Image (tube, rainbow, N blue to C red; front, side, top):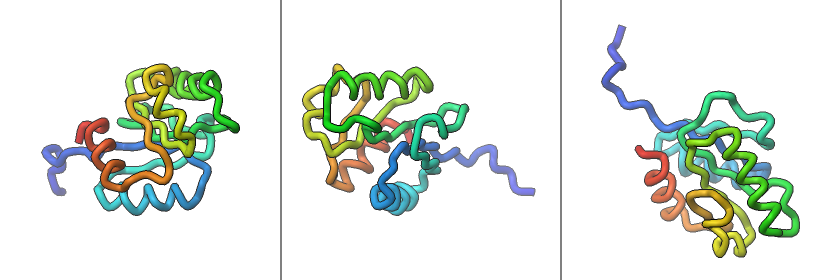
Length: 126
């Protein structure tokens, strides 16, 4: 049996996203980078064990309202209090409210792939 104790564990990323095209993009880009990805449509479907990073759309925030966006990020933080969160949204207003949102980064769709990979690498710690 091969000793895998010295092989670094890849970061596990929880992706809360209901758009199949965006999920496929994450699967292709971040999967190729070697990250373990877990996809869910809703927070209630997410695993109990804390991931290394959460990427989330602003679920049920239509149209954009800062209070609703903060409430969503607070719900995710309540479930995973020490896990960094990347908010990935089509709402450009979210970039102006990063500090109030409570996440560590905001990526506005459509986003630059290199910025996605750099942000994930920085926040996942791998």
